[in-house]
Length: 292
Length: 83
Image (cartoon, rainbow over all chains, first blue to last red):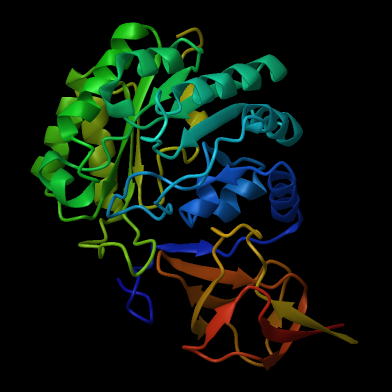
């Protein structure tokens, strides 16, 4: 079923962000000089999430040193790291009353630790200032540097996330050449080994030309690497410079993938056209028994 | 009676913020009533289709943009007459 213009199927439709709460969140984030992946990725969920007074913070600037074909975040030579950013994220979490804070970052191959200490500091500040708030990090591969992964894991986030993004077959085409499918699995495996009782999460964008067999294979690989939470959503082209959408996956197909993931043993699986790695991620902790 | 001009709301002043899109089609006819939060028109960005809501309750008396027009944040879209 297509919309009148034929560009998007009916299920790829959101409300344009507006309203007082949205404006309040916008002013607060700008006042603290913070970036969000909501804006940098032109996320269609921004209206819904910001109206619920939540946002996904993008730390270490908004310029990525890598360039993946699917991603809307700008790439190039990043500027210096804002040392006040961890405190400002903690302040924003407090003022917005966020109970589950998601902190993601651009990839910073120019920094000796890939930005791991800065991410860890952010987790620490958020937790110190917001005693009840749980934290989820979504990090790059740190070039496989175990010390960098450990630095983030030991800062104490309840959820450690690293996105595999796409199936093995499409990895060379869609991801920056410095990423690799096997290395991303290794990052998840290392995180699992460092924190056997924490949640390890990954996400896939679908509609890039993968088959069902590809997707199920990747879900299996993620489980084998110790990943126990997964999110799957539709690839939406951020702009003319990005690759085209190969297919709009139907909501029913997403439900089948979600069901398949649960049957494979993922403790948390969510899939849908507008699901993003951090979309409604607070449900992950809410849906599971406390104390993990 | 007063007139309210609906503009495309800003999503943020950051250099990364979404700045606009293309009008796909109108969702209500001229002279029809609309409630606050009711659908006015649909615009498309590269990523998705977005429904633009009316911030006020009233009657649509003017369409200030047409299908296929490029619109940016702040562009006047419609006039709503408020009772």
